[in-house]
Each structure stands twice: as C-alpha cells, then as structure tokens.
Length: 178
Ligand code: HQG
Image 1 (tube, protein in one colour):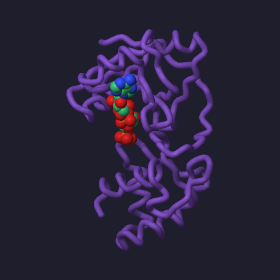
Image 2 (cartoon, rainbow, N blue to C red):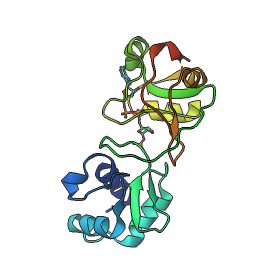
Image 3 (cartoon, rainbow, N blue to C red):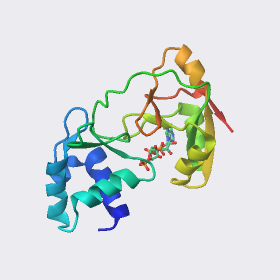
C-alpha cells in the first residue's frame, strides 16, 4: 500500500469509522499501536510498523500523533466520532480564516459556520492555509473570522496539535467575506 493510501485509511479509521475496521478508540481517541497494526495487516499484510511510523512522521499536515510513550496513536483533529482530545481553551488571534467553496458562501453568511459531521468548525491561522482547505470543495472563497471578538463574547477556542483552530460554531455576525 502506498503511503498516501495508508494515510487515508488511517484518517478513516481514527476519525470516522474505527468500528468498520474493528478497532476501538479510547475516550481521548487513542488506539494501541499493536492493535492498529494487526488490524491494518489483515487488510494488507505488507503494512509494517516502519511504514506506519513513516506515514505519521512525514504526513503533510501532521494529521496523526503518537502518545508520549509511543505505544498509542490518534488523529490530532477532524473527528466525526465523539472523542475528547483534552485540548485546553486558548485565546485566539484577532482574526482567523475559513476556507470554503464559493457556492457555500451565501448560506454561511446567512446561517454562520456549522460543524457539519465534525466535532468543530475548523479555522486556519492564515489565508494561504484557508485557501488550500477551501479548494478541496471547489472554487475557493475565504472568510475572515473575528475570533478576538468571539472570544470576548465568551466563545471557547482550541488549537489542535497540528495547528488547526477549532470552535463549536461561528455566528454570522463574526464573518466577513474577503
Ligand atoms: C461548509 C481538512 C453551507 C464549510 C482541512 C466546509 C480541515 C457550510 C464544509 C478539515 C456551512 C464542511 C476540515 C453552512 C459550514 N452552509 N456550508 N452554514 N457551515 N459549511 O470538510 O473546514 O485534510 O467538514 O465551509 O484541512 O473544509 O482532513 O470541513 O466547506 O482542517 O486533515 O461545510 O479537513 O483536513 O467540510 O475541513 P469539512 P473543512 P484533513
């Protein structure tokens, strides 16, 4: 299996459908590496611990992280299954960015940003990252998010281990098209 394919399989297993692969995440989203590897090897016997480590370490967005003792692995964000990543609330910068597709903009400006199937709305620290995120959905559009004002209004922000900003939702009054 190619590294990219293994990365996609890991996203699926660690964020969305661990049950389908027959693995169980703990409340914080961790799975023992030995269990995960055994499960992956039933799908493709060529997957090794070395390849798993390489995919985690070389991943373009650092999507996965080993526990401190190296015995467990989890996805750093993007879950649709309920997990408690144990992230500490953190004060956001005045402005964050959300990349989406142009066809979603009217609806987002009317309703605000909703987390959809994920646990949080995902925001980017800079417009370049937001543009890349938006491009996944179509012609990209960038929205400016008044994160500082949201924080002052009592909304809680988190930052994942790989630098993605997370918030429950963004009401429309805090959004502005670029
Ligand atoms: C849109 C990737 C209409 C929202 C990225 C987005 C990110 C609305 C889509 C992570 C809406 C959901 C997440 C509303 C939100 N009306 N559309 N009211 N509210 N939307 O994929 O933020 O590669 O679930 O704008 O880098 O695109 O997976 O969220 O377009 O960090 O590691 O609904 O996924 O990371 O799409 O991406 P997604 P996202 P990974």
